[in-house]
Amino acid sequence: MAQRIAIIGAGIGGLTAAALLAARGHHVTVLEKEAHAGGKARQCRVRDVDIDAGPTVFTLRSVFDDIFHACGAELDDHVQVRRAEIIARHAWSPEERLDLFADPARSEEAIGDFAGSAAAAGYRSFRREAARIYDILDRPLLRAGKVSWPLPLMWRIGLWRVGALAAIRPYESLWKVLGEHFADPRLRQLYARYATYCGSDPFRTPATLMLIAHVEAKGVWLIEGGMSALSEALQQLGERCGATFRFGSAVRRIVCLSGRARGVELASGEWIAADAVISNADPAALAAGRFGKDAARAVGSVKPRNRSFSALLWTVHAKTAGFPLARHNVFFSPDYAREFTDIRGGSPPADPSVYVCAQDREASEPVEPGTRERLQIIVNAPANGDTHTYSAKEKERCTKAMRRSLARCGLELEAPLPHELLTPSDFETFLPSTGGAIYGRASHGWAASFLRQGTRTRIPGIYCTGGSTHPGAGVPMAALSGQLAAHMVSQDLASMHQSSRVAMAGGMSTPSARTGATG
Figure 1 (cartoon, rainbow, N blue to C red):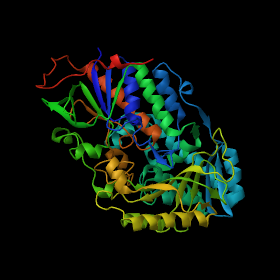
Figure 2 (cartoon, rainbow, N blue to C red):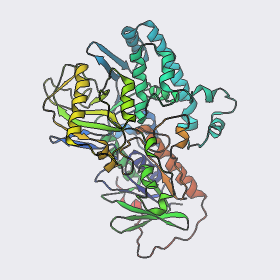
Figure 3 (cartoon, rainbow, N blue to C red):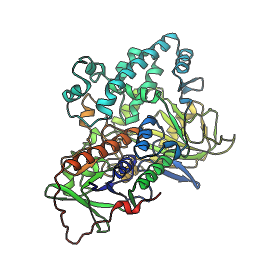
Figure 4 (cartoon, rainbow, N blue to C red):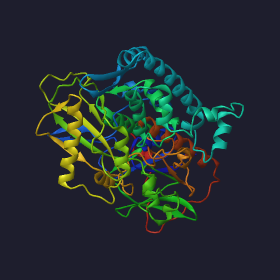
């Protein structure tokens, strides 16, 4: 029987859940406080040019193929996607550059040329171990509901696979285990960087996170129009299936009656009845009471020391010179450990590694020499945006440090630099109660995966989705969380005994979300 489902937030997780639940015949209403879909996958405008200011790396394409297939559609009919030949370009100096390729044989050859035959052998052993970890955890953990302790995970993996839990190496640090594969400190630094994909310190994360490198090696994809185009495609998919989207509709509170979620109240005072409410906000916002005191009991809070990193993020429209940019580029600092010591101390790195997404490179229209191009530039920063506001002087200092790191590797940017800078305090405004932590809880220590918020909460009828919930950060993981939410909501509602609707005095219930269907 069709049920009424309210989804708070139109990020990747909420969009995925909306499309899948609507495709199953439920009446879905998505409530988004912003004027557009996407959540963290948003854009900033610099000199009348829109530049992606959210996630840029698209992996695990098959996750999205499955979502579109489940809704009777094809991903390729909605967005233009093609595989990137270069996964990423890395630099330590103008003379020290290393590309990793979609073809692992080319990557192995490039690593051998860069650091010698022992390094190429280390790459082969690393690839095998990263793939093994991914294969062990893919179905039992990444694509299944959260478990709260190792024993249930072991049951899922299979008790007969007695060595599997040890094989994922949860009790050893990523930095330490990488030393078993790579003697060259540059390669150790390169592969340690994958911990920052989930906003974590490679010196404190478990070696389990090597699986992220395997995910990227399986394929990086380029989307024409960036992640915003993917968000728009998911919105259109949801609308085609019957979901209704209401933008500019902030939710004041989740209404709980008799110990169960019964709907939401908007900032406008309007009530919307629902049999289930899915929150695509960071769980920290729920815990902080951003959706009412009753809903605050649904999840646990995250202490500031357990937050993931925030970021300094520049959106830039400028001329570049001196370095042949690919789509994804990483410029490494000479002292990697110091970067994370600075962040742990509450300051952005004085001498940072820098990620640059050159959004017009490897696009359908090549960048003409001497013309401005769109860049997103990221430096990791502490998630203290709720306690510290960056002054103009600090912003200038951080911009100079970023430019020094790029210049050290041969990349020069136009001066003065046409840009907008987002700081942790800006991310706190966008992601309330997080301090600007972009990735939710940090993946530090062996128990991190068990402590991350799962789909179900302590209050029946309230569910969580998005990159800050299980299975973790990143666009494909947020989509997997949306799949889990759709599955668990459908499962729970189907098992409920029908009860009479609860009347809410002075309120109103929206009509069927399917009345807003398009296509």
